[in-house]
Length: 292
Picture 1: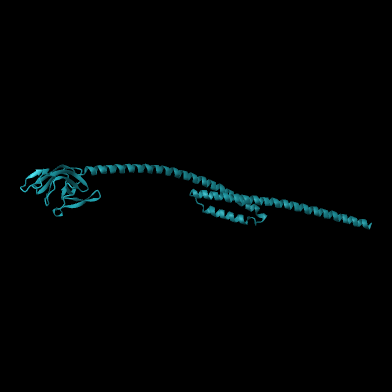
Picture 2: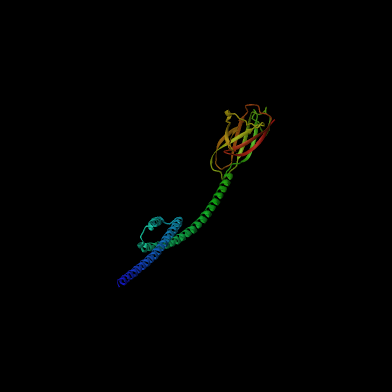
């Protein structure tokens, strides 16, 4: 009887132990499933947070390229990165709070999409305005170039028209007795050379003082030159050339007659002599004579 009672008690204890063991195993199984579920949820939230950080970084680059304000977004991205570092350390009880933040960040991304669309529209409008302005500037530059070209062409025509020219050039050999021989004369009978020119009337030319230079060029291509008789030099075509004699006149748009004389100081060589008449930086006219 006593043995049966012991067996009965042991049976009850074994049953209770079995129930407790089953309950413990059940709780462990449930807890493990919950742990796995929570870890999975945490991984999902972390992945979303990481994805949001990457996408926000791309939008920051886009907004910066479009000229938008990015300082606030950079601060938010830095905050997300810090939360990613601390994320794994947080307790499971914070899942709901983090999920709420994730939802908030998603709304932020949507808002930046709208900002990007707005900025793109503004940039498109600016591009169109710049394109129109560039076309107008190009057209204006073309017109300015045409005007400058026309102005330059007109200035060239005015400069050309304002140049003085000669109606006549006459060269005489004058003897001791005062006899004048035109264009061809003997050396022995000649004491000086006289050159008469008539400057043409020119209404376009300005009223101003002009230097008229005469160059008498010998048959050997050297210029008759005597500094004591007023010979000198002047610039022509970027080089220094000599003149035989010159006069300074006031040109008043009217025709003028001028006389130049060169007193013989050496024997003239026989041959053909050239006469060139210059003013400023151009030749007004030319002639020639012969000494026998």
